[in-house]
Image (cartoon, helix red, strand yellow):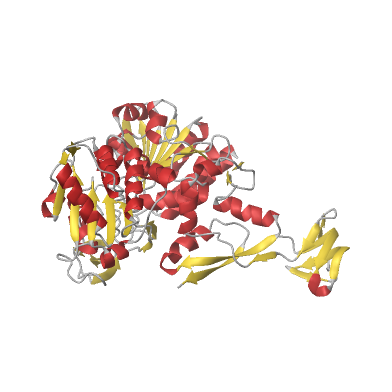
Length: 434
Length: 146
């Protein structure tokens, strides 16, 4: 059968925090056959949309038995209704309307609701809660930045088009993106991003906090009586500070090298203070390199609907927040959760061993489009449509920009968007527990 | 909502019609205030409570990413005013930066039916529309910044 090729322009890629909005797709029948402009990761996501899909299953006697969607939802509701301390987790790889249903489920069951920032940029949020934030848009970076820093972040791997879309590109006030703009990489090793940067500063592992402290001291005009800090010589430190102070518009992009190494939220707190100090000399902003395409959205939806950005507990009938207490890894590692509802994430693959060990002893309900490690150990698996490909929705870019994800093709037969599955679970649950 | 509603013992304030705290009976039919209702009516005794036109707040920052910044930055502030859920209302937090549900409920409790968001960053319109979805009971408008 001769199938017409449909072309979709300006599709938003639902993979990483870049949310590139210029993807051009070709679709034949219900299959995506071409992805132009997308990076390798984007191409993989769009072109393999039909692969590794899951069906509704319930684990019986160690085997995943295929059941109807309604049976799977019924079992999920049973598990949540009888749980004393359910944990709702994930949200970062699905659209905003699905989040709303997750918070409702946590409130109705008196459970905890958390998203992936608790193992990623959670420390960034803690740092902001400590010291504030100098924030701006990616557009501003493209048009104005003459100094671009990547600290503990390797965009060439994790955000492949970040540099080509926002940095090595002409801007309104930056005519030559090579000559008028300098890329600095601060990292513990020479990554592939460091290899293509203009400047690379190698920091001793675990010494970012000292290093930032030294920079701040020099920026503020205090002389240092050290020969070197964090493996960087005093002379090189002075050169770096001179360049930072001479910057007209600077941007500090940072990643897990800063949030998940020794110091964690203290590193971010210090980086925020450094950026604030540098604003005495030029205009400076900072931006966390968000990994998943809608983790920023999860923080936003959680904040306006519960008051708090992640690690939210509803045991008392109102939202409470306490990183370390209501963060998922801790709730699991302490053996506190007796059931888990996982949406659009893969905790079995990414959580520390102690947390995963506990996960394997409690009933896990897994809602995801595809097979992953969590689906292997889940008691209930429920398939979902791929947000931004098989259903629409809103997602938020790493700089806070909300974007509307379009539906390009239909999901597989009988597969619904996360928001509908969660709504069905909540409605049934509400009838049971009231 | 019942087709016909009668409010008894209403203390009415209506400056346009020069009514200043008069105890009255207000009759409503199909969402409009009428002199007399025809047929069966649901009667509500408001026991002397104030009955007035819904308040309109012309300029109130109720949605937007700026609120998100504020809310996210001060968890210690929220802890001062926890708001438990009820059978008909969602839980949340109050004090300086209430969550969206509590914002709507508290405006209602004060007698407001409209609150206008005066500072919409136009590029982020989608985000504000979504957030408005979770502000209950209020009619609203979003005034773009430019």
